[in-house]
Image 1 (cartoon, rainbow, N blue to C red):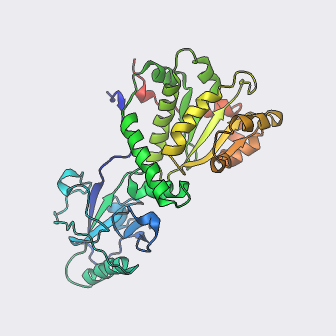
Image 2: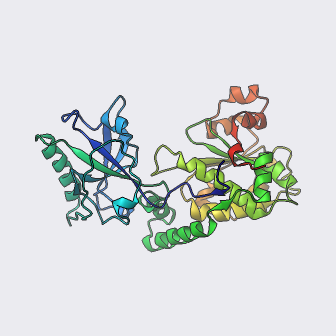
Image 3: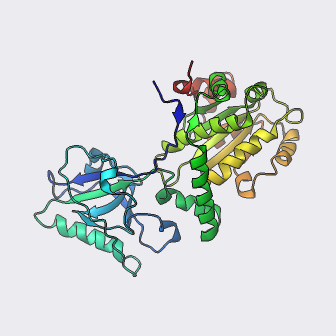
Length: 361
C-alpha cells in the first residue's frame, strides 16, 4: 500500500555510483562531459569539475553502469576531484553500484586558483591511469533535480544573476519545502481533486503537462480549500520534474482547460494566484508554456488583465487562445489525434495520468 504522505521527489542526500573499467581497460566511458571549471557563478554549488551532459548511443560502459545525465565525477581511482568536501559521509549515502569492489574515496577538495586547471587535472588523471596497467575506477555522485547542485542555476537566472537575491530566494524555497512536505494525501480536498481528476497529468511529449480542469475546480469550491488545490498542483509538478531527462533544466507545461467556464462571470482568479504564489518562487525556470483554452479573442484581453499579478517574464510563457492549432503547436500535440478524440478535453482524458495510486478509499 502506498504511503499516505507525499514527500518531495528531490532527495536531500545524493547517491553514489561507481564505474570500473577492469573488464575492458581501454574502453571509453561513452558519455559527454561538461566542464564545470570555467569560473561561472552558476557552478558554485556543483560538487565537482565535470558533469555528464549526455550519453553516447550503444551498449557503452556508462549505460551498463546506469550513468545518467547530471551525474558528477567526484573521484578517479579514489583520488578526489571535488570543489568542496561532501556534506554527508559516504556511509550515509545510497550506493547505486552493483557488485563492485569498494574503493576508499578522498573527501579532500581539489582547488586551483587558475580557471580550468581542475578540469584539466581530472582529465589528465583519467588519461594517466588508462595508459597504465591499473584499471580505471570512476566515482560519481547523483543529486536530485532540486538539490542546489542542479537548482542553483535556475534560481540565479530567475534573479538575473544577482547572487544575494538568488541566495535569499533559494533559502526561502528550502524553508518552504520544510514547511510544505510531506503532503497528506488523505486530506479530503486532495482526495476529491484526485478522484474527480480536476488536476492530473498528461504525458505525451518530452515535456509533460499539468492538466487543470477549471470547471471541475469551481464545482468543488464548497468542499475543497484553496491550499488543497495548491498542494495537488505541487504533487503533480514534483512527479513530473523528477522524470526530467536532464535534472539541470527540468521543464513542465501547464494546461488550464476552460471548457464551459466564463472568464467574466465567476472565474476564480484567486486559485490561480495561490498556485502562482507557490510555483513562481519555488519552481523558477521550470515552466515551458502555460496554455489557457478555449478563450475567445474578445475575452483574451480581459484574461491578461486578470492575470496582471504574474511577472513579466512568466507572462511571456502564457498562451491564451481559442485556436486549436496554436494549442497543439505550443504543447507539441498531434492535432489529428486531438480531433479524432473529439476535442481537447477528451484527448486529455485519453492520456491523463490521474494519480490513481494516490487515491485512498
